Length: 211
Image (cartoon, rainbow, N blue to C red; front, top):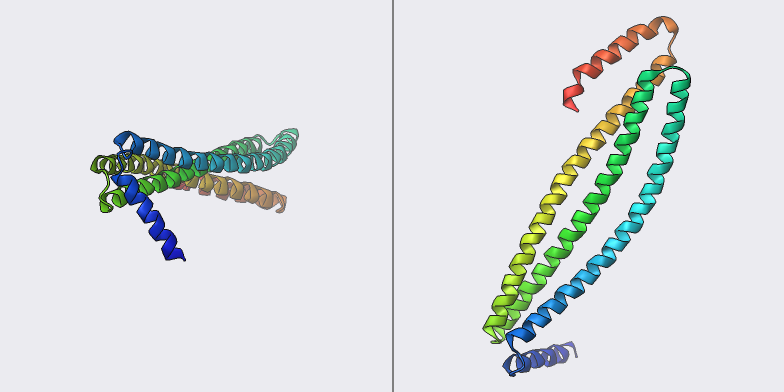
C-alpha cells in the first residue's frame, strides 16, 4: 500500500513536470508557498519562545525583588560595598535573562532556516532526477543556497550570544560567591574578621582579570 501511494505521487510529479503548466513562474510560486509554510512554523516557535520568555521574566522579577530587599537591608546597616554588589548582581541577572532569550531566538531561526534550505535542495534534486524543468531546478537550488547562507549567519549569532551568556554566568557565580564569603566572615568572631576581610580583598583583586 505505501509503495502504491509513493508511485502515485511520483506519477503526479512526472505528469506535472511534463505538462505546460510547469513553467518557471509556477515553480517560483511553489517555492514561495514552501517558504511561507516554513515561516508560519517559525512564527509558531517564536510565539512559544515568547511565552517561555514571559515566564522567565516573572521569575527574574521575583529574584530582583528579593535582591532589592537585601540591598535595602544593607543600606540600613550602612554596608555600601554589599549594597553595590547586590545592585551589580541584580543587573547581571537581568542581562543573563536577555541573553538567554536572544540565544533561544537565534537557535530557532537558525534551525528553521537550515531546514528550509534543506527542503529546497531536496526539491531541486527531485525535479532534476524526474527530468522536470531545469530552470525550476536551478531556481530551487539557488533559493536553497541563499537560505542556507542566512542559516549560517543565524548560527554565528547563536555562537556569539552563547559566549556572552557564558561570561554573564561566570560573573554571576563570582558575585554570589563573594556575597556568601562576606556572610560567612560576618559570622566569625570579631577579632578574626579584619584578617579574613583582607584575604577576601586580596583574592578578589588577584582574580579580577580571570573572570
